Amino acid sequence: MSKYSVTSGVQAASVKVVLYGPEGIGKSSFAAKFPQPVFIDTEGGTKRLNVARLPAPTSWAMLLDEVEEVRKGNVPCRTLVVDTADWAERLCIEAVCAKAKVHGIEDFGYGKGYTYVKEEFSRLLDALEEVLNTGRHVVVLAHAAITKFEQPDAVGNYDRWGMKTSKQVAPLLREWCDMLLFANYKTIVEKSGSGQNAKNKASGARRVMYTAHHACWDAKNRFGLPEEVPFDYASIAACIEGSTPAPAAPAAPTPAPKPAPTAATWTAGGGVMVEDESPAAQSDRLRTAAREKLEKELIVEQVPDQLRALMLADVIDSAMLRHAVHQRGCYPEDTPIASYDPQFITGSLVAAWDKWRDFIRDNSDVPF
Image (cartoon, rainbow, N blue to C red; front, side):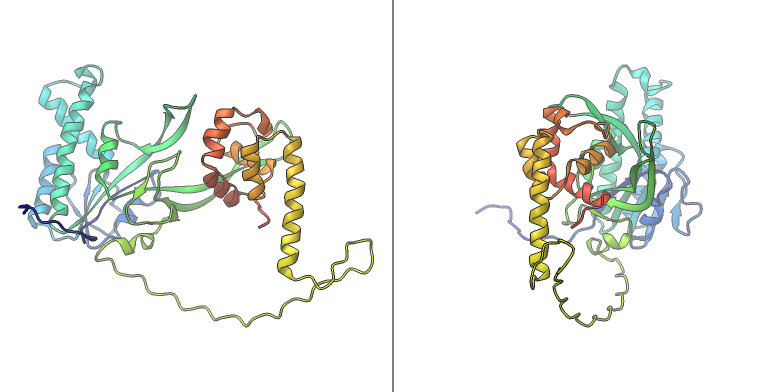
C-alpha cells in the first residue's frame, strides 16, 4: 500500500492572474474589482484610484518584504495586486547590479545579467505562491509592447504583442499563472478612398480581452473562457472565488410571434417566378446560387484547391480575404491570392482558417 493518498476531482483554489495591455487601457481599474484587493504599486499608477495600497517599494528587498507581510496576514486583503511586473523587474535589475557591484546589467557580459535577473525574479513568484497558499488571489499587471517574432518553421517574421518585460522573465510569468489575459482596443483598419494614393483609416475603440493564444499575442486560461470577451471584470468573475455577482439584468419581454411572411410571386418584369416558396427554401436557393457563382470566380482567379474549398464552404470571396490579409499586414490588398507564398497559404490561411474566417466576419460585411 502506497504511503501517498490519491485524490481526484476539481480542487477549489485561489487564482493567479497575469493581465497585460497597452498603457491607459484600465488594467489597474480592472484589478481593483477583485475581492478586497491591496496594491503594491511599483509605478504610482493607482494615485487616481480609490484603492487600498501599500507604500510604493523603493527597492527589491522592500517589495519582497511587503509580499511577505501579506503572506503573514499582517495586511488585511483577499487579493494581492502587483502593479506592474515590468517596473518590479527594474527593482530586480537594480538589486542584481548592486549585489555584483556593476553599473548596469550589460556589464555582466552578453546575456549573463538577465540570467541572474531571471533567477532573482523567481524569488518573487515563489513568494507570491506562498500568498496563494494562504487562500488569497494574486494579480500581476504588466504593460504590453509590440515585438518582432519569427516562427522556427516559417520564413520571415511578424509583429506580435507581448509583455514589456525581458524575454527571460516573460516566460516565467506565462507559465506561473492560471490566467494570462491580454487587453487591447479592437481596431479596424480600412482603406479611405480608392486608387494607388488611398490611405488606411483606423476606427473603433472597443476594449476587449483575449484569453487564448493567438499568433499575434500570448494568452491562456484554465477555465474554458471564450477566446474573446469584453474587457470587464464580469467576464471572469465566475472564475474568482469570493467575487460579488453582478445584478441580473431584467428579462426582456418576449416578442409576440410574427406571422410567417407570404412568399412573393413575380408576375411581370421578366423575373423568375417561385410559387409558395418558404423563407428557408429561398435562403437555401440564394446560398447555392452564391456558391456556384463564387466557385467560378475562384477557379478563374486560380485560388489553390484547399483554400478554395474553405472559402466556398463559408461563402467568402477573394476580395474579402485579400482585405483581411491586408489588414493583418501580410500582403498589399491588390495582390492576387494566386501570388501569395504557398507556405503562407497552407501554413496560415488553410491551417488557421477558423481564425481567419472569424476575423473576416468580425470586420467585413458578410451576408449571412
